[in-house]
Length: 379
View 1 (cartoon, rainbow, N blue to C red):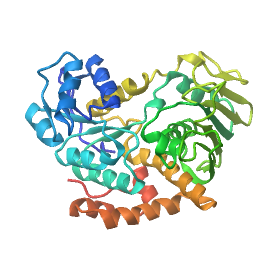
View 2: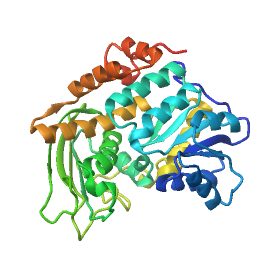
View 3: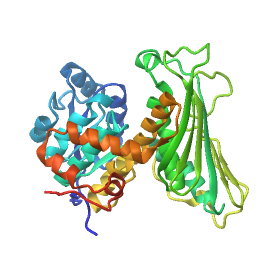
C-alpha cells in the first residue's frame, strides 16, 4: 500500500519548520523545536508581530524572520513543514492554508473546533497529499506504553477506567467555559483509552455536574461511560475542583481483564497482577509529550511511517468529546456513528473549496474513510 502522504527524504539536514502561534503553548513548542536536532526553526508566525518578535528574542534569535501569514512566511524562508500552535478556533483556517501550500502540518489538539471541521481537514490532507498530524502529547509516555504491554497478558479486557481529580485555579477563559473539563482536558484521557484498547468509540452516556464550591461557571465534573468497538467499556470520572489527594495530570488508571488487572497512577511505573515474561519496562520509548510527537512527525515525513495522531484517526478522540457533551446535554445515550454522520453533513454544507468538497463526497462512509478503507481523490 502506498504512503497516503508525501514524504521528505532525509538529506542529512534538519527539517525546516515554522511555528504558528507565539502564545504560552507556542513558547513551549518553540523551546522544544530549538532543542531538537531533527528540526530547524526558520520562522515564527503570529497575528501580533510584536508577540512573534518577542518570542524570537526570548530564544536569543532576534534576527529570526516573523510574519502574520503562514504560507507567505513559509515560502519566504523555505520552510518544509508547519507546526500549528494557534487557538482551537484558528486550527482549521491555518491548517487549511498550510496544506494548500503543499506543507505538512503538526497541530496542537484538538484537531479543530468541531468534528465537522476535522473532517474537512482530513479531506484537505488527502487532496493535497500532505501529512496532517495532531499532537496528542500525553500518548507519548513510556509508562503508558508499559501499561499497554502489561495489559496484553490480561486476556480479554472488559473495563478500562480513568479517574482524574485536580483543583487548578487557571483564571481566564477556562473559568468561563461551558464544558471546561470535557473540552479542555478529558480529550487526553479519551485519546489515551483509544490507545490502550486499540479501539474506537461506539456510544456514550455522560453526565456533567458542578459542585456548589466550584469556581468554574460551566460544569467542572463529569462521568462518561463509553462502549468501544471491541465491546469493552471505558469509564471516565473527573473533576477540576477537587482539592486534596489529587491524581496525576495523566489520571489514575485501572485496566481490568479476564486474567487480572493493571494499575497505573499516571506518574510511576504501572503494576500488574499477572506476571509478564521479559522486562515489562523494556518496551518502546515513544519520547516525552510534545518532544515525542515532534519526533514521530519527523519520522513519518522521512520514512512514510504512520504516526500516532494522523488526522484521520485522531478525529475519533474529538468525536468522543462531542458525543459526551451531547449526551450530557440531552440526558440520552449517543451513538458515535450518528454524530459522525451529522458532522459529515455539516462539513459538506460548510465546505467552500470545491476540490475538498469533491473528496468529502467521494467517501462512502465516514468511519471507513477515517480508517483508510475508502479514500478520496488526491492530486
